[in-house]
Length: 382
Length: 93
Image 1: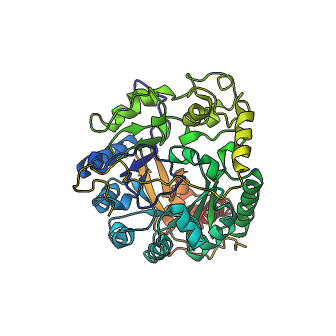
Image 2: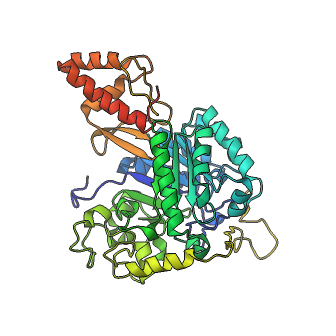
Image 3: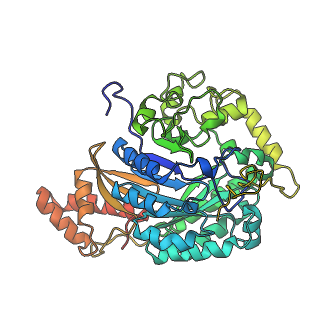
């Protein structure tokens, strides 16, 4: 696709973080500790341009995320623009607040798929985890409307110690709501989630049991419900091919327009991120220092460099390597070949053994986002 | 347990399962929730016939004519493809 770099793959997915604003306050949120302010968000025209450029670059799927993407007043236009440019639009939503009100218009604009989060099936537990009262009734109503409109529905369940004993109930809920797909995604410890790791980490026994429940249900529900399982990193043997390999498949655009190879890449100090405000997406994909830093295998150290898995998992996750070893170029310590691997297992076991009822540090968007003086609340999510 | 695909089944692409040509990679694709299926020319033809009207048997007949190929071979390929997509919940019957 590019004469100067013939082996450079075209990106297939765009994670469009439309806003960091969100009604929920989930302790496992993987957004950065410092959120983009509403006043710094990209405008509609810029998103239209970014989406058109993404389509021309080879992107097929657009994941409209955040924060809560339906908070954007231009969400209908953004989805309409995805449809106009042939992009497959995936709305990743909590289903609360004004989401239901907008759903018919989103469907009419050409929305392709809805991924709806549930924090738990038990109402009290769900609302404790999400830090938002009456979320469950709104989510149920939202799910009902999605399927009534004929849109495919995915339920997303982020799993941690506080809801790991509800995995079977998540599966039942997905079937009852007519979802085609369920994501049982064990928490990945980035951003806010890393602050709450000790309150979220499940035990190895609970993890194993939850995986068994999913395997059994997959067989029983084959052809009715597709279940995708994201296993918890810390208990794995090999790392995941994070974002399909750095700078190989995914582009992440933040609410303010910075372009990242992965959602958590800003935790890596010293990387230079370019913005869609200054450059085209194609230019950024091809030449941005942040994308070049860990693309391919040339940057790898041992044990990755001589490993025959290096083009399968691409060294795992750079952000996790940094967070757990202090070096973003190190082998992801989830990998059994990492010298840090044993330490990670010990850490997970120690944190999971904390018996106390989980006390979360809740996410709050409005903190630090409201002007000190009385005035319009910049962080207002309504 | 799931019922196996039959020749008289009539399938359709539900909303959220979209066929398109990927100009950048020069290939047909089926876009579905969180998945992209790369389609060769025959697979693209098979799915092009999935319209909520034709039965699996009709699709096999149409393809056997188009490719002047043994019906049994075509039937096996068509059923393998469609059954896989049913299993992944990106086709409806």
